[in-house]
Image (cartoon, rainbow, N blue to C red; front, side, top):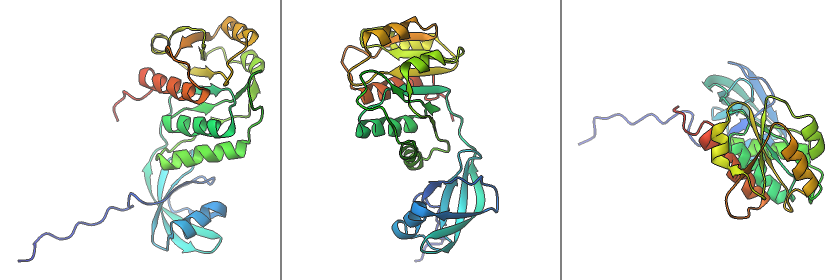
Length: 256
């Protein structure tokens, strides 16, 4: 005997719909022309065709569902069909990591984006093994991480600045938690005791030198913190510290 239940309508858009960040400010019924590597990804990798759904974000207005209306070799055109979500609120925390070797710093960029950091402000110290950063590439790493994790906002990534300039120009309203390998208050306790705009400063593979450490400790907004009894590599320290901050002072414990 045939079932009397009608088949379930497939979810639309499907969970497998491609997600992209675009430069254009999005609004209902807007046409979006996608070219370059993104068009190649949609047309050749995901093999979208007219009528398919894609998810678009612009880092300003939120997340939108769009329908593909035309697929060419070098351009895909889509029409905004429906707004899915507002741009997510972002906890007010900056990560200020000393530059590391490229693959290790890529990991910091990727995981900090996944964790929800508001801004990434790379720092150059005397013991850094690198002193330059390709900003376009760094932003591409963050965008890819945000797309994969369904974020609707991107961190602000700035050009690297030397540690003395960072301290000199530091905003008076923002706390600077300084991961000091020579010790400090346990990170979770320090984070819990302070509220308001925050930032986490992480040193390079060789650590801060004595003069840098003294200058940081002398800064009125700086708070030395400890990340536990074990020695952590730069990328591990950055991810661990940001994770603890999100659990204690961020939005991990907040209900949807």
